[in-house]
Length: 274
Length: 303
Image (tube, rainbow over the protein chains, first blue to last red):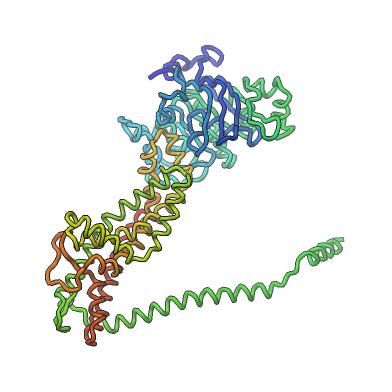
């Protein structure tokens, strides 16, 4: 294993501000849909074993950005990205990089829960199996479901369909299946936006656990959520209609919510617009 | 005071909407009657047809009829070679058309880029579904019977099944594509996000999810194939043979061929025999469809 996995061992158990290691490094990333430029010139240091929240008004490129981080953006016909995204010592946009491998190492949880139409067990096991997992599958499934705080609710019906679960449970199942392929980074695109407050609470609790072992990036429309769970916050903003989205300000969450450098950030986090 | 505000509310509504609820309900009932009538026409005609055939045919169906060869003597005539030939055709056609049809649908829906060429192909596949079956027969005569006769054995089961496969391919392709298109992209993205390749997503999620829809297409396709007569006549199926085909390169006949032959004869007994043949054909068709529907439900029930 290279890069982040090595680093993770060193940071485990160390206090927050010591020995910070870099999880991902984004340099001058721009994203396009056909000829339309949706996002321009984003640079960001994503710290390992921290939660980085991405906030901003609708349509300013947050989802586009997070999809660029594991090369899911290009799955959309006509979509492409330019720039450099480093995971460890490897540029994920390098010609020699296989996006299939990148997506295993950088997992993703989507806005709408999208479990497969398979059993709960198979939902978790499938990704591990196609990636050549050779260990004890039962153990992996149990561990992943426990990490996603779903095990207690489903342990007696692992053979039931993943689609039979409630929305909040489905989303935690999607988190579990992402964990089962043992990624370094987990990207979450508004994972709680379609859920009720109780389910949201459970997902937020899960995330607090997750950052012990993973680097987490989360897009959210919920300012309180960003303030509660994240260590770093990036504010995306479009100044004039039709411009591409930009990373307007990026800093520690505490500073972003108490004393941001830019006026637009302050207006947004205090709820004056957006 | 509350009385006054109610008055205002009513007056405003009355001025902006012309409600005639009675007329709307009458229209609703009228339309219900019309669509019910439309359903009834189809059902009644079908019932009369079935009853007519059953009354004529069923008394003639016995073990002898199922297990004997055709004969010029109506009392001795049986349908065995047609039954065996049709089952062969059904099996071979499914063998060729199902994998090719589903494969083409997967390519067009999941792999092919969306450009003018693939759109042309799409339109033309829809057109092919409407081409008269005799045209496929002529194509098969030129290609499979004559050009590739050394492979197919000429006027053989294989040539007949290939003609029928061409005929039903568009139906299978269209049904499978519709089924694939109905699967939301979030399923594909969920698979890719776990580090799956395109084939792994197709194999693991898309094909199982599309299978019920694809099987509906297969049911329609094979139902059509087993009843077709015109392409088999052109390919050169015999109306009368006194042996059973033992392999795909053998000469053959089929149920609709024998029914057609009997129905053309002047003797009244043969007309009744044709009715009996139709009953046998429909039973084979129903059994094949029941199998496909059972298969479909098995997959639908799973999750």
